[in-house]
Length: 143
View (cartoon, rainbow, N blue to C red):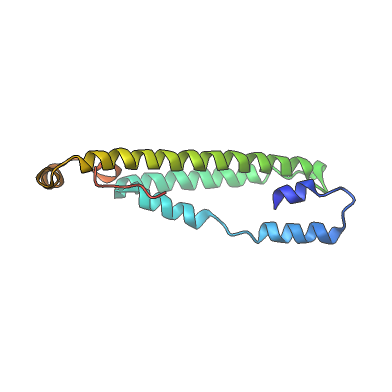
């Protein structure tokens, strides 16, 4: 939507700009999905607490930064602000793909180790391991 809004000609009708803006702001908010993924992938309560606090700090910092993207001198079309948002979207797409590939790689590595163990070795590992949370061999990341 933001790309459509950015590519809209300067002389376009106010209604077309209004419709694109409404569709853009009506897009689902990703915050609950990210909180759920952080909680699921944390593994232990200690890691979940730290990860949630760091995520919350990032959300608060993003709110401060976001309030400065659309500036008065860029009004009324906010071309510069839209370009900044497009760059942030592109960065996030690359970041999400990289994280997904990393989680898939880690899961595959752990699965290879886990599958290489006999049932007796697995039971011994589960009974004696000092690993916790996402460090355990039987833990798989959600992606």
